[in-house]
Image (cartoon, rainbow, N blue to C red; front, side):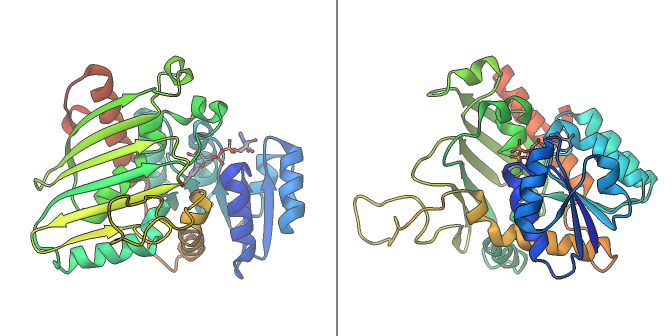
Length: 331
Ligand SMILES: NC(=O)c1ccc[n+]([C@@H]2O[C@H](COP(=O)([O-])OP(=O)(O)OC[C@H]3O[C@@H](n4cnc5c(N)ncnc54)[C@H](O)[C@@H]3O)[C@@H](O)[C@H]2O)c1
């Protein structure tokens, strides 16, 4: 297949290597607004750098978008209008109106758009979902999610990211819907700029806590942070009537038990999302190629991305207005 890849910054450069490693990819054309960067990554992975979006799209069988969030909607609409199966990193856009426009455009054009919520492809999350589907945990009462970056991204990234709820915690919102096959009914959120005063001017937070109430009655608590030098730390604990399970707890989990030796934790931590989710990104892009060829279902639709964004929007509103927000308030 001939693939056009747009944006080879932090994540796009890693996706370039992954795409190049997939046997189905016969040709990879890379465009980045920073042409020198496109050339550098293309030379590194054995791809061709091109100097415009059109050149990346022309003659491609599918496109992969890893550009900043505020460019996604325009690039998706252009690709879908050209009939190109499209993979786009999360989120589709910062705002609900642009996201809804994309959902409508994909539907009108009968287009193929897969969104990059890679946790859906992680072996731990998939095993937990199987156990939940089989009913092994009985009634799920509650869950706890940890979402911590090792080092904060550059301020320039934070500025265009849409904020912690839409940029970071959105993964937890998406995976909540996917894991529990349920929808969020109500959100309460708070946040802090402790240690990161520059976030104040960007109307963002560096640490946040979100309480979710699902329609079925389960309660979830998510704690997210931008700075955790112990390591990149993504975990879930699910408490059901019959059993409690954890996702992401292994010898690399960056926590240490200081009271007991019972848990053999505290080995080398995950340095970044590339390492923690390397296999998931690989499986996700391999799946996209099958989806683009019409051989697999869409594992994460534009409508899924819209729902995750609605929860992030509710969290932002709850934090700003200091009150619980019902999802039904988010049009
Ligand atoms: N799924 C995940 O785990 C995950 C992790 C990190 C980032 N992301 C998402 O991936 C996207 C990119 O994030 P990043 O951290 O790689 O950002 P980044 O800023 O490191 O890289 C973005 C790249 O896109 C280029 N660019 C900017 N505008 C462009 C345009 N119009 N056309 C082509 N190239 C353009 C920039 O020059 C840069 O090289 C964001 O939407 C982010 O939310 C997802």
